[in-house]
Image (cartoon, rainbow, N blue to C red; front, side, top):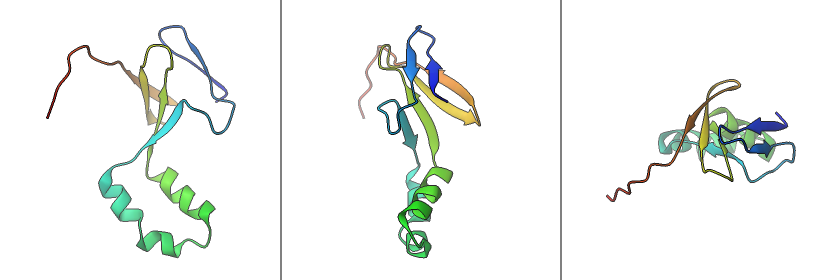
Length: 89
């Protein structure tokens, strides 16, 4: 996917690897599931990275409006935009 069009009109160039717009989201549970036992089973860093990518969700971030696009299924993204209210824990 070399380019991604945001709802705000920004064209996000994804052809450069790595880039500043694609991110991975992974739950703490999945991190625990794949480390350290599974990393010791991997014979090289490529296998571990494959394991990481297989257990994470792809996110694209717009550098203009701040929208996040979360991949729900292969090539299908749902957009989220920042709310104006701030919440504190």
